[in-house]
Structure formats: structure tokens, C-alpha cells
Length: 253
Image (cartoon, rainbow, N blue to C red; front, side):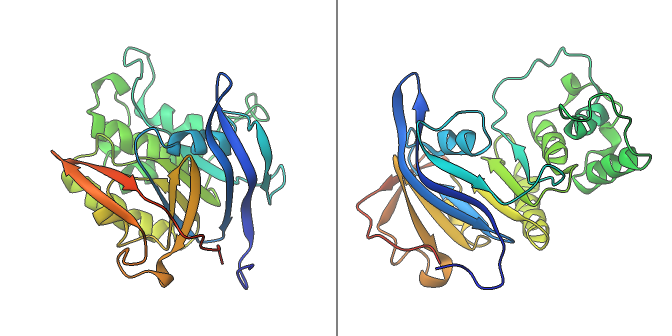
């Protein structure tokens, strides 16, 4: 069922994808509308990051199709990947990292608009790292680096913000601020976010997509703190492991 008065931004139809001939996710169906806030949860190795990389075009689907409701002039999505490895010796400043989000194959030779630098500095201020604007990225902590790359993903004011475990490396104080900021951003853009932080993320999101090879969609309006979601969570140290059991098919509406 289509959502009334909501524009469909992204649609996945029977998408399968993987690496080196091995299928990781199979027959994925998903729709993302204006102002959706969807958390993607699931066990390690279940295909969450594969799904995100397929959506943003880093991996080509082996089956099915992905449809974007956009045109070449629109900034349809911003993407914050997992930040596992980065060359900290690369001579680039924090401000330039954020500004690099403006570059594309269509505008590499074009000058930035006069207010682009101000937009970048405003985002850095919002994320609490404006004082680092002129520093090299090699001097940042992991949490600071994550904030900078979040600014980069927002510099084009996307209609859909795609985040792959954005709380990785983020300090505890900023982690709570991050969810609050995402809630504010959700007023003007849709958000699709991979997260292991089940206890916190469900306070903010509107939908949950459980991914374990395939995808099962749950609207938070139809759930009461996962009472109807056949998922259990085992906590080991400080990292929750999500174990997904059998799902009843729940239509996305």
C-alpha cells in the first residue's frame, strides 16, 4: 500500500546482491518515502552493509532492480559509510573533507558557490568540530572524524541520508546528541540507518528493517517495543548481537 501524501524516494524490487559470485542478500523488497526514518538491524554477516552498498551503487545487484525517484539535478542521497580504515597521513584539512562532498563527475571543474564554505563551517559548528576546521584529519580522534564525515554526507542537503553504523567511534556524549540531531534532520529528509544500538535507536525511528539474508519490514506503529517482532537480543560485553528468528511477513505500508 502506498503511503498517502508521501513521495516515494527509493524502491528495491526483489534485489539480490553479494561478492565474488556469492549471494549475501536475497530477494530484498524495500520502499523509502519522504521523511521515513528506518533502522536496519540484524546479525553480523546477515547482509546489512551489503544492502547499503548495493543501494548507493558500490555493488551491482545480481538480480532485481533499484529505482530512484529523482532526476540528475537533485541531490537524492548523502552517504556515511563505516569508517574502518583511512589514510590519516593524507594532507587534507577537515574543512576540505566536508567540501569534497560537493564534488562529482559533473562539477569537478566548477567553482564552489560563494556560500558553500559557510555552509560547511555551519555544519561543523552544528556537530561540535568547527574549531578543527583547519586541522589535518590525521589529528582527529575517531569520534571527531565520524562527525566530520557526517558533515560531508550532509553538505548537499540530501533528500535521503544513508548511514552505516554512524555511532562507530563516537563518544558516549555525542552518541546521544547524534540521535537527537538525526531526529531534527528527519524533519526535512528521510533517513536509512544501519545500527546495532537497538535499545536506543528504537526510541527515534519510525520503521525497522530486519536483515538476515532477506528483509522483513516492521512499522513502529504496529509494534510495541518489539512485542510483535520475533527477535531476541543477546548482549556480550558492550556489543549487542542480534539473533533473528522466523518472521511473519509484514507488508510495508
